[in-house]
Structures are given as C-alpha cells and as structure tokens.
Length: 254
Image 1: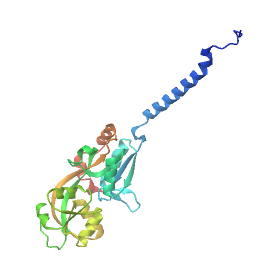
Image 2 (image 1 turned 135 degrees about the horizontal axis):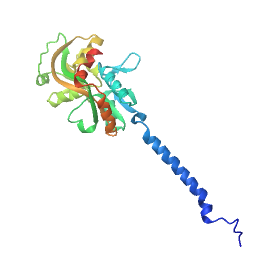
Image 3 (image 1 turned 90 degrees about the horizontal axis):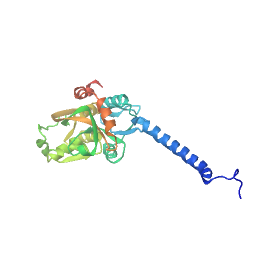
Image 4 (image 1 turned 45 degrees about the horizontal axis):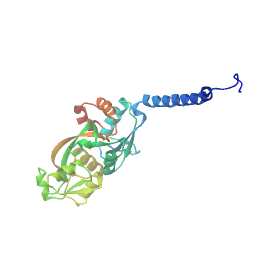
C-alpha cells in the first residue's frame, strides 16, 4: 500500500497544468486588452493620390504637397491618425481605395455613382470644372452641348470627363492630366475639360497659353475611404476639417 504521506492525489498532479493554462490565458487576455487600448491611429491609413496641382502633386524633393494635401495633413494630425501617402496614376489610386482595406484616395469628386463605394470626409477644397482651348484657336463654345462639334480631351476615371461624356459628348482619354494638356498643345484634341485651377497651373508651368471657354460646375473634393475604415475615424477627421468656405478658397493661399 502506498505511503499516505508521499502519495499525490489526481488533483495535485493536475495543478501545474492548470497553473500554466491560467498563466497563458492571462497573458493572452493582457495582449488583447493592450491591442484594444491602442489608438485608432496605430494602424496607419494608406492615402493614395495623384499628380493634380494645385491640390495634390509632388514637390521637387518628392514630397506630396498642394492645398488639399495641406488641409488633409492638418486634419490627420489634429485627429491623431497616422497615414502613409502614396502618389500614383489616378486610375490606380482610385482603384486601390475601392478594393483594398484601410486605403483612401483624394482629391475625389463625390458623385452619385461613387457615393455608396466609400466613406467620405470633406470637402478639402472646391474645384471648378472648365473647358479650355489653345489661345489663338478659332473655337467658340459656351456650353457642354456645343463641345460635341470638337475633339474633347480628359483622362481616365476623371469625374470631369465622365460628366461631359454623360451629356453625350465623346471624350478622348489620356493617361493623366499632364498628358491631357500635352495632347491639346500638340493639336491632338481641340478642347480639354478639367479643373480650372489645375488647367491654369499646368499651363503656366509648361508655358502653354490657354483660352478659358466656360466654367460649368463647382465640385467639392473629398477624401474617399474604403468601407473598412471605421466610421469613428472618419468622424474624427471630419471634425478637424475646416468649414466649406475655408476649403473653397484654400488653393489661392498655397
């Protein structure tokens, strides 16, 4: 018969296992609580944009600058949200925000077709949509319908070109806005439709003389985020954005 003083009960033999399980559970629980206690900015947003001056474009040093960028960076800082900015062709920037979690894109026109695809913060700035020809060309038009007699240029996935095309005008698409202007200057298109400030900015930089035919829309520009971006984060950003009136004139002070 075993010595009663040295025999160990089943409960005593299982005790170290229970202690290890308890310790491991407490460690896991602590890790989860620590993760939940981290600020929302712990996982940075990926914010995609394009070369679209004066709202968003690269400086000579390669930093993304511009009036919309300035407004957005200030809001991100005030809301304590970490973000990584990436400069891409517009179609790629827009598609990344549509399909990839924690991705956003700016400066984005908020259209009916796009509304349900994203979560929105803004406006950051206001963009005027306009039609331009080259100075000295005998082109007269004062409405979108009158553009149907001309070769009209825009670029891929651009809301301005989409709007004009929806009015029944054929639109020739360039890869980007700079190429759109280059095609106009080369005589490959007769008219370009674009943001007024953008067209004038690029034309001045390239020493191209434009003739402003007419302005046909004022479009606020937003940050558009994949639905995986939390509503709370969007609210925090919105709270730290300037009123619409300040956004409207922001590019003039860049």
